[in-house]
Length: 312
Image (cartoon, rainbow, N blue to C red; front, top):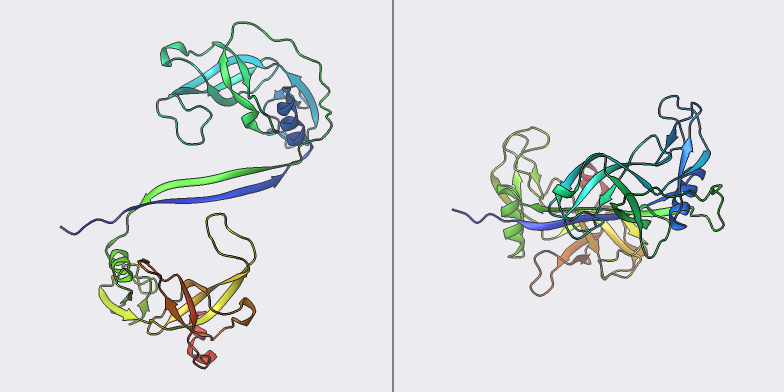
C-alpha cells in the first residue's frame, strides 16, 4: 500500500482594524477595569456594545457603565483548551449577562469542573494583570456571590485605544491526493512533473488530478522544465516574520517549458528592478531542499510575448 503523505500546515496573518467611538470606549474601559455598554433608543443596554441598533439599525452612541458581576445564561464545558484560548486548563465557555445589561457576553469561566457550573450561577470578571485595551483584558469569569458597585464612569478616557491587531490563525493537517503526491515525490528528485489532460492535451503544474477546463480525470504524468519564463510578477516590500529574505524581492508566475499553467516562485540572482515579463529562468536547489529555493536568470534572450500570453 503506498505511503499516505501528510503534513501540519498553519495559515496565519494579523488583522489590523481601526475602532469607531463606541468600540474605542469599550476597549479603553476594559483597560481601566470599567465595562461599558451602549443604550438603545428603547432603553436596552447592549454588552458588548455596537454602533448600530441590531433591531432598528439606528446609530447609537449613548455609553453606560455596567457591573463586572453577572449571571450565567448558558454554558458549555471545554475539556481540552487549545492554543490561544483564555485558560490552559479545562474551563467553561459561558454567556454572562452582566448586571445592568440586557444582552450576554461570551467569555471563559474558570471552574473546577462541569459539576461546578450551572445556568443562573453568579460570577464576576477576573481582570488580567496587564491590560492593553483588548477583550483579553478580561482574563476570565470566576464564581462570585455578591454584586459589585458601579463607579459611575462617563465613558470618557484619556489616551483612547483607536485600533487593534487581531491575529487570525488556522492549524490543520494536509494530506495530498494521488496527483500531488506524485508531484511532491518528483520534487524530492529535483524534477517537476505535471499531468496532461486526455481531452484538451494541456499539461497542468502542479497537477490537480483533473483538468480544470474539461473536468476529466488526468493520469498521464509529464516532466516539464526545468527552465521557464516569467509571465508576471510582483515586488514584495513587507518582510514576513517567518521568511529570512531581505526586502524588496520578487515573487513571480513562472511558466515552465512544456507546462500550460504558471506556478509561483521567487526570483533571485538579479536585482528586483531588473526582473521583467519574458525573463528566462531556471531553478536553484539548496542542499537537501525539497523544492526550488528560487529561480535565477538563465542568460537566454527574453521569450517573445506571443509564446506566453495565454499563461498570464
